[in-house]
Length: 232
Image (tube, rainbow, N blue to C red):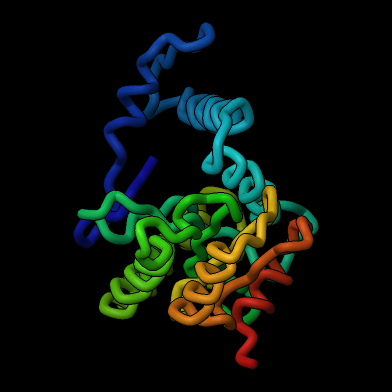
C-alpha cells in the first residue's frame, strides 16, 4: 500500500484504484476511513488466492515464501522475521528482490532472492551465465552504493510496522551485504549443463551466500539466516 519514493513513503495509487472495484461482492466505501482494515484484509486474501491458484515457478515460489511470513506476527516468534517482500531495488530494471529478513537479536537486515530450482534464470541459455548472477550481484551493487539510506529507510519502515501491529522490532539496524540467494528444490535434475550453471552461480554469488535446498525441505527463517551468514 505504501512505497518509499525520494525521501518519504508515498501511498500507492493502485491501492485506491483497486479498492473501488466490485470484486466478489466487495465494494469499498472509504479506503481512508473505517473500511481501511477490511480493505487490507480483503486484498491479502485476494493476493493469497492468486498465488494458490496460479501455476508456474513464481506461484510455487510465493507459496513457499508466504509460509515464512507467518513468523513475523506469530505468538511463537522466531529470532528472524520477514520485514518486507517484493522490493524494487533497481527501478529501471523492473526486477524485485523477494524479501528482506530482520534478525531481531543482531539487529541486522538481509536482502534475499529466492528461486525454484527449475527457474530458467538459474540455467544457462545461449552459452551465457545464469541470469540470477547478474540479478543478485546487481542488487548487491545498488545496496552497497545506498547502504546508509537503506538502513535509515528500513528503520522508518520498521517503526511503522511496530506502530501498526504493536510489535517491538529494533529500528536501528545494519544492512548485511551481499544479497543472498535461496534456492528451493522442485523437480531436481542434475544434468551436466545444470551442474555447470550451479558452479558458475557458486563462483560469482559466493558459496557462503547461497542456500541450496536439494533435500526438498523448507528450512525455518532462523536456519536460513544461520546458513547465509556462515563465513566458512
